[in-house]
Amino acid sequence: MEKNIAVALQVKAISVAMVWTIILGGCGAAPAEDNKSTDIRPDRVTILEGLAHPWSMAFLTGSDVLVAEKDGGLKRIDLERGTQRTIAGLPTDRVDDVRRQDPRDNAGLFDILTDPGYPRDPWIYLAYAASGDGGTTTKVIRGWLKNDSLINVQPLLVAEPYSPDRFHYGGGMVFGNDGKLYITVGERYYNEIDQPEMPVAQDPTDRRGMIYRINKDGSIPDDNPDFGEDAVAGAYAIGIRAAQGMTLHPESGDIWFSEHGSLQGDEINVLRGGANYGWPIITTGNYRNPEYVPPSLDRQYTAPVWAWEETVAPTGLTFYQGEEFPAWKGSLFVAGLSRGSLWRLTVKDNTVSKAEKLFEDDPVRLRKVVQSPEGRLYLLTDEENGRVMQIIPAVASDASHE
Image 1 (tube, helix red, strand yellow):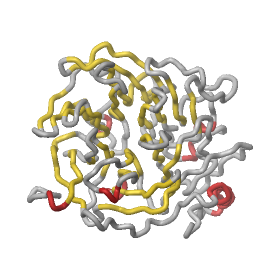
Image 2 (cartoon, one colour; image 1 turned 180 degrees about the vertical axis):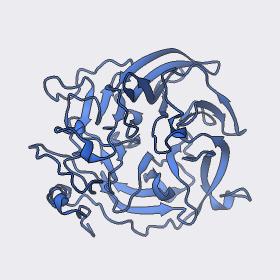
Image 3 (cartoon, rainbow, N blue to C red; image 1 turned 90 degrees about the vertical axis):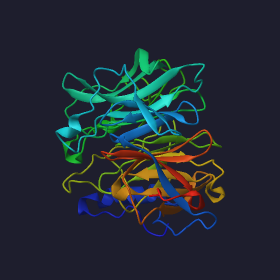
Image 4 (cartoon, rainbow, N blue to C red; image 1 turned 60 degrees about the vertical axis):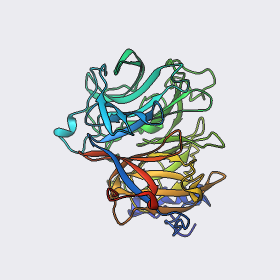
């Protein structure tokens, strides 16, 4: 490691940082290195615009996609024609317009997935912010897509309690190679000083601040880890602050996920059943409130495989397996909200060795990077006039390039 990534900015956080330094050891976290691709220079083209803060994209075919919008609804888009249609039948308890009252609000539609057996199994899975008695929470449903409408909608998970906090819903989802559905739920607090005596993400009886593993119908697998008496059904890992992106490693089948830190401390983690990722007891960054001192808990914590020294706000991520950029094959691409960054991480044996920031001269706030079934890379921009962009070789670009 070139620098200690757990340097504490506040005196009261020094002991916490020292613990992470010991745990991290040689995890490979380091400042971004100059690892520029030398074979083919990338460019971006806008495929479609006019979306309301697009969050996620699911492929029905190579060009027919569903896009979930944080501030809007669910759209069906033809990537070849650049056309879009609105999907009807969304849950009536969804919250997608709070940002008009408070621009910091994180409510809306989140990840959207097709069933691994689609179209034979025509289920569409959607995570979103739902309203209820006391506020909002993260909810996951599934339904069939028929004639541009969701029908036969079934609830799968409700991360109660409903609360007035407007942050850290999570809402990331992925299907594992085991056919199970994995879901991230954030701990909902913006400032650590508001935590209860036992922090939410360290309490296995609280439905927030954890990653779930459930069957496709919402039932609980028999081989889930045991977090003790009264633990939340479906709990698979705890110690989560604000994880949004999840993806499968194409070779190992491991699930990798992004995690937002508080004051710096943005991370990439590999998911392990029964793991505790430490928040807020342990962090690679620091706390928003210098007066916050986490409780001392006798627990084992799992270190990230990568942590940034700068603020990235990492979200949707994917491993590249396409053919257009041979030097990128096997790289992990991570979209960043902060500063509009797109990162390419070089990965080998669950270790990140290098990091490259793309399109530094023309950043755009990004929510997700997605790979099509044909191996094409697409970006979703987190803007009022949200765009679907495609990364292409520069030689193939034209006057419309960004």
